[in-house]
Image (cartoon, rainbow, N blue to C red; front, side, top):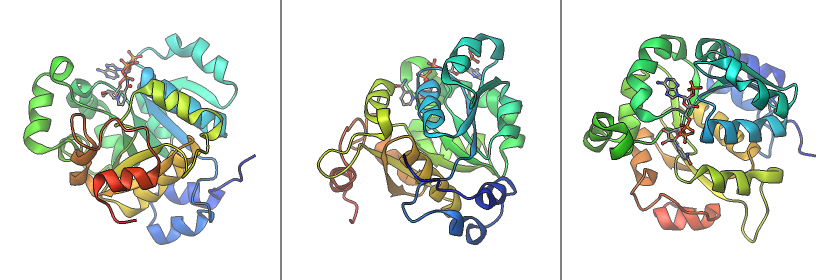
Length: 248
Ligand SMILES: NC(=O)c1ccc[n+]([C@@H]2O[C@H](COP(=O)([O-])OP(=O)(O)OC[C@H]3O[C@@H](n4cnc5c(N)ncnc54)[C@H](OP(=O)(O)O)[C@@H]3O)[C@@H](O)[C@H]2O)c1
């Protein structure tokens, strides 16, 4: 069994929005996290998959829907650490929040929950596709995916994460804590501007069964956006670093 990796103090520090200095000593040497509370906004393919991996690792997860009652059988199947709620309830619940909704929903979602996300660690799985997201896709092409997410959720400690592969790949590779193949587990590229949030995201990526690769700041998230050279690789961290031209 994996060791606990955040202390209670870290979770409280994160919830209170305290500094990196306060939160980081609580990270264990293997860099993964003691169990925290996570609010998952959007319990579809990606939110359901990654949220489910966190539950299996021992985190408490509230899955949010516009119709939480529709998630009853999903959360009961995951056991007592999984709950269903509204997006607002999931944000209040979570020490960290995972956004996994269609990108075209961001403007409306931002009006509803943007203020509540200020100061929160927010992992952002959203991708923009031309067919589904229309004008939002055009905005992302013009401004970059990291800058566009940051525009809709100003003040959130955003980390782009779990964007660069299909949920079925995540489900397979994250099962049983991730399979150790030669060189490590499947790598997940992440990018963000806030060092504390990046540390939290690295821990949560590990806890879902993957190895994180910090690609850079939010503007660097374009390096693994859909259609970019960093998208769609089921490879280990050293292999992904090489593909992205990152130092070891
Ligand atoms: N699917 C993948 O393999 C994959 C991989 C990487 C990244 N992504 C990205 O992750 C995001 C989610 O993709 P998905 O495939 O998981 O989508 P999905 O299966 O359609 O689920 C999205 C969830 O978002 C919620 N939602 C939809 N419209 C909403 C709105 N206007 N406001 C609030 N919530 C809304 C829905 O929940 P309720 O109707 O219950 O509210 C739905 O369950 C997308 O941006 C996608 O590009 C997907």
